[in-house]
Image 1 (cartoon, helix red, strand yellow):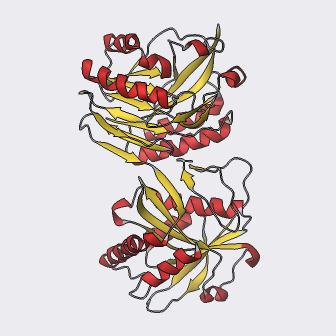
Image 2 (tube, one colour):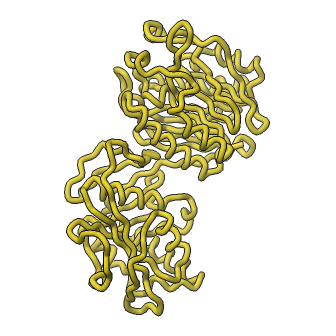
Image 3 (cartoon, helix red, strand yellow):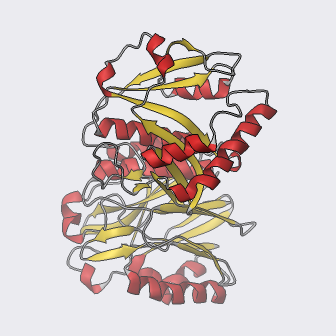
Length: 437
């Protein structure tokens, strides 16, 4: 059984935007074949006690239907944090979505004294059986109370998951308490914490996993969104914290090797899309100098890149493009390291490019795809890129399809998984964090 812990940045009170962010992280968890994904405390609204009464809702609210649909379609159990309405007040809850089952609510049973003015206590401890394992949940303050942990063990829990919103002093306590509980009761502990401003404090991530011996298995950093995946049977973990930002000249050697390895892999499949003269180290170097090559990193390791600019190849003049030439963004040299392919990273780079186009009022995106690389052509078609004609480049026997997609400016609801707290001017993207949003 694989459990996914999400470390997210939620926007204060912006339920719709936070739901979209959650869905992106769920998609990432599914990529790693997770059976269960859990989000931080009050993740849908952010931890905002003073807003809880106004934002509280019922488990059956249609607003959460997208979670149930994903759960049903992909067979994944999902736990999101929301304030829920109870007969005697508002509760801090995890809303649990299980495939083809009714939604279940687990509500925080032990409240911190600061929460008593806003919330009422939950009444019982739910235990969920997932893939043969009994899973118990705790929410923030109560997870640091040994009595709560012991009660879950008495109820037969095999795994304990803490959904929290903690500043650094709270994380320090957790780093002492959870390994002790895990070792004492031979029970793995997983903690999902958020990042960013919450109420009157800053939450500092560091979501983590401890095995049944109390040993630290893995931990995320203190500032970025990401996911941790833990396999209960094998005790193996995977970590994903993604960033997309402009590449630096210091990245040149690593990037050139990624392109070279990708070229060799294509040729092994008899796809001669790139040549010894394209892309060269000097081409990549110029991309970096011009500030048009964006790199995607996972845990600070470069795993891919994409050229995003307004520079159109001379051959593009032969194509009868549909959309206005005055505001066109062009994609070139999209590459993902061969060891990181088939995990959705190319899709993330294209979402990044399309969001960049929207925020800067471009009317369309243009690109070319090698006609003999059917997988790539299909990838762009699935993203609604339309073929407008064919062009030929030197040293290639076969044509490239000239493709374009109309870009329509979105409303105030980005459907992306990277943090949009940025100011983009003339494509100057600064430290754009994937959130997967």
